[in-house]
Amino acid sequence: MGNRTETIKFLVSESEKQDFEEYIENNPEYDSLSRFFRVLGHRELEGASDVEIDQNAIVDAVDVGVSDLREEIVTLSKQIDDIGAEVDSSDEIDKIARDLYGVLPQVSEEEFKAKSFDEIVHNYDVDSLSGIKRVSTASVWARYLDISVPKCRRGLVRCDEYFADVKFLEEEFEGESGEMASLPERRWFRQKE
Image (cartoon, rainbow, N blue to C red):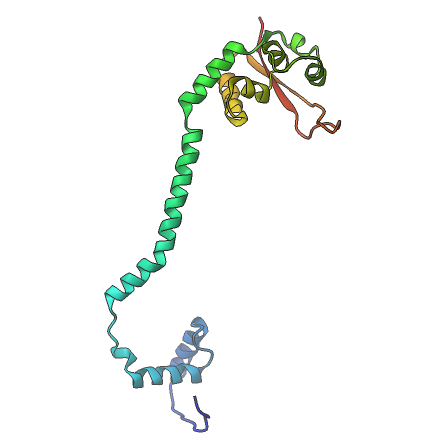
């Protein structure tokens, strides 16, 4: 715009002025009464009030804007389906639970507590079934059953839900560095009567 050297004045009622000022406060497009009336004047001169809106152009613009969202939703939907297939494979977890129930050591809690986790790991072959039964953690059972550790954990938890004699002990153990591991390990067994 060129230099503004001319002034235009007009009279309005107090209530009209308050309405204009309130409108300006609520619309960031305008920062003053002068700007408000300049914009309105230019729009009127340019015929902005007579502009026809092309509905198809609006639909096309929205469609383009939404297409990225649509692609993201499809990607997320596939990821949710993958997670659902992993988590909701209830039949598979039930089978793992039954398989684990059949191989978990059946001992009294006192017998199971008799040797520490570290002593068992260091003194027994954890690749043999007898060694695996002595350690009896999700990680050794997962290796024995050739399944993932998280899947094995879910199977052990399901086993605990289904069978009243399935128990576990939480034990702290030494990590590879010789320090105590940050989380205790669950050792699973079937309670002998």
